Amino acid sequence: MLKINTKAPDFTLTSTNNTDYSLKKSLGKYVVIYFYPKDDTPGCTIEANDFNKLLPQFKKLNCEVFGISKDNLKSHDKFKEKYQLKFDLLSDEELTVLKKFKVWGKKKFMGREFMGILRTTFLIDKKGKILKIWENVKVKDHAKEVLETLKEIQK
Image 1 (cartoon, rainbow, N blue to C red):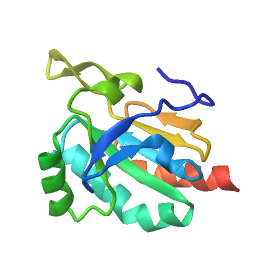
Image 2: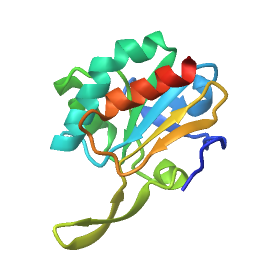
Image 3: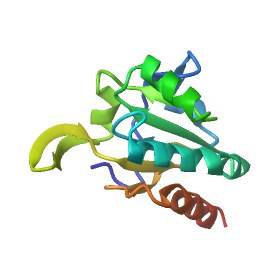
Image 4: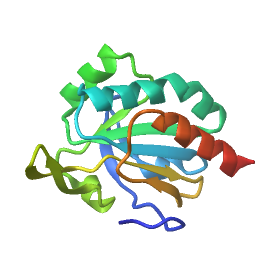
């Protein structure tokens, strides 16, 4: 697992705004990167909608929000459009970033074990350093907790 106070690995992924997004493009801003298992599933939809609702407050705090999963851009675009998400989703079909951030791992569901995305959120500072990591995220009120943490840090 990555550690707090270490530099977040830089990456470049294709974004739903049809450009490539690199973490280094966000230097000078705070960044929330949340990794989620799958577009348009119940937990992921709640999480996306909650971040979307709070987006204006994140923006006021000079913070960008990005969701990353291994879904392709077509799936991301549909998901973004269906719920009118105002932030970009990044596609990691090759699992490169998922592995860099150590969020690709063994999961258990209904007695089965399989490889998948471990729902994890990273808060990154203006210099690209990891300020906080939430592992095994429970989606209810998670976006609010991330926002509260950001407010505390900026005090």
